[in-house]
Image 1: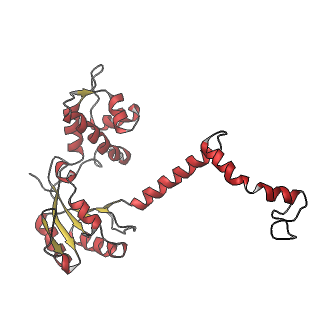
Image 2 (image 1 turned 135 degrees about the vertical axis):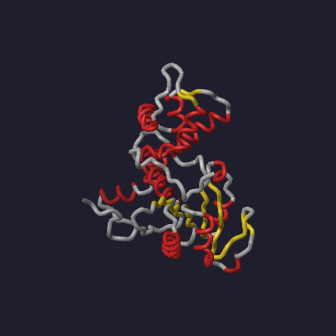
Image 3 (image 1 turned 120 degrees about the vertical axis):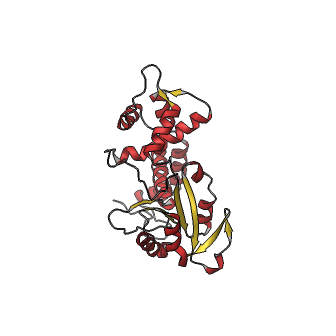
Length: 265
């Protein structure tokens, strides 16, 4: 079986847009679920719904793979699984190192989805000498002093950084210098890398902040709808301010004496 250092996906040389590449794993996840249920074929509409995209975009994406389906029949599920897996480079072995074996790093090490998708965790690495030798997910944790030799011995080209933010750039620099050319970064910081090195950032706090934004927007829309529970609650909360405002308009004293609670316009 080929290793990650001897072959790289051909998506760029074949001119597949990055947006399409980003959607291929979504299609593969949906197709894998269909395959596990022994579904032989799927229409573009059904697959698009399962992947969360529109069918026209799906058909356009698949055209880059040279797969157009059969009118009235749809797409062959097993063949599409193979096509997309091959395009993503998942039909070979990709050794991966995880650096930073705290709570997050240990959780990643225990994630069972790596092996089934073509990724093999070759080593777990941590800077804490007390962690050295401790088994996590069946692998002994190695000290960062061994990082370069581990990468060389295992032909690693993909590194996962799960360290605190302050250590991430130094770890990144060492990974790149040792030959790693793709990095998945879980540290809450932006990494500087040279040309030719790909970085994918996963920041859970940013994702939660985006969700909080949408929740706030939805709450505002609810308040704007007369008769909604949120609008009634808002009216109830604002009702307590009305007596003071009315007193100000009537020229009466506010609760603090001669100054009205709400100054008239």
